[in-house]
Length: 209
Ligand SMILES: [Zn+2]
Image (cartoon, rainbow, N blue to C red; front, top):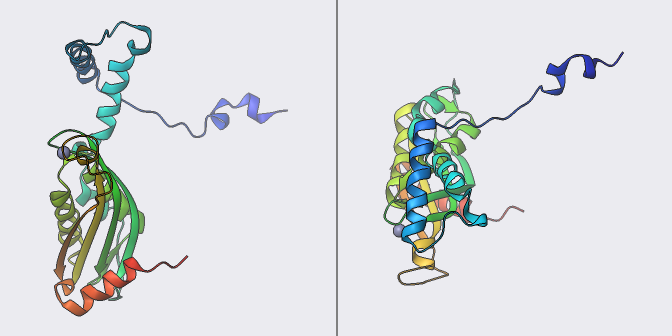
């Protein structure tokens, strides 16, 4: 007897599905179709027929952060722990979109905090970076929002966030500077002290592999 054939739920044990709001999707499809026409394209030609729909779904995916609450994410894995050493999650991949041109900016985020009785799951820190990145952003605000959400939920002794990113709006248009990287940082508590901040910067700059 083959249980895999008999019990379908075993074969379908894991299924990832995406859901989109129908009204939002159809509204966006219409608008993106018009935008293509205004840009001199023919939205009905073969290669573009499904483009407004793909774009409508991609944009909803890339802005899903509006519907998610970073405080809730951090609280969902908040544990009591008596440690007061610096915890660093570095090289978190980051993909966001600038709110001025709606073009991507991408790079890395480095986040550290010094607990004051509570820690959170390491993956939650990366999740919070994702949630704030999946909104229309400026890099400076993104940096501060990540810092504040950790500060407000964990009440730590200190928080530090550094983001290094390349902005397509600078690379593809405007000043066309292909190799410029923008670095932003925000520090709170212990990290406002020179010594702690230098230790953090040294640790995120170190190549351990
Ligand atoms: Zn821009």
